[in-house]
Length: 380
Image (cartoon, helix red, strand yellow):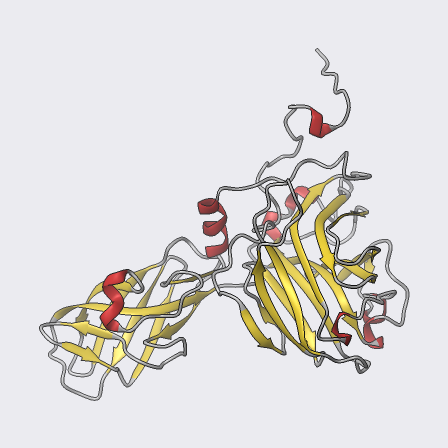
């Protein structure tokens, strides 16, 4: 029995033919922003929108906010807004500024990269910028140090534009089927000559820095009036010539999207809020855990993480203020024991042991309720 499709895929109800319907890009609709909006950013770091990272080298100062400015009628509620707050109109040769998103190798096996059955792929997204110009979209295989790129143009300022990027298959360089960093997607919005003086790699090739962002002219960092917004990032197996052929964006419910993000980063207090001091813990702003005093100077408690993380995370302890090791952790064993002299952790992928050290005054063998704030980081 054959199935006849009339019009384009969006007009029909035939299921999308991919081995998994789970979106390859996590949080492509920019809904999850656990870290909260950021200002004064001058160096590479994970930004407010979960799973997205900014790479930058001495090129201005930037803010990253979750915006409600989105393309109309498509179901998107939020976008990532990148705003230049200190300009650099003359980047040095080694300077650059690009947005990126990284994935685990075990999540990209569907592309069959490095085999004779390697698949082409298509990246699509919506973008809006206050200025026009060219920018580069790059796939960088970090495992095998290979890359491929396409040059795209913002042709109309202050207008949402759907962009479709087609990438060829690569029969060289298999992706490790592990939780390690694999292919990185990048959008190069500004760059010096070190990354742009060569020839753009239109087919997969060994990475050459000079070729990475060749043709970039957008120069997003040349004026503090500049901004770019992006949302609806999706990555599909196969070649889709235009938006009509492309499968619809696959929205996930917010709880699923949040849990997928928490595999890499999570915290004990809600997104968009600062850690609270111990008197506010009853409002649900901290983790609560039963522990015990091990000696006159040490208290231990085991805290279960919200979900299994990619790897054993790095734990940062937060107390009354949004600054590490500032304010108050406490445990209660008949009386509050505040302000430990130091804190340490022994982390596993699903839990960690918090160790609170005091100068003296504890009673070995006492149990108590521990309350405090933390962030757990297992990013790629």
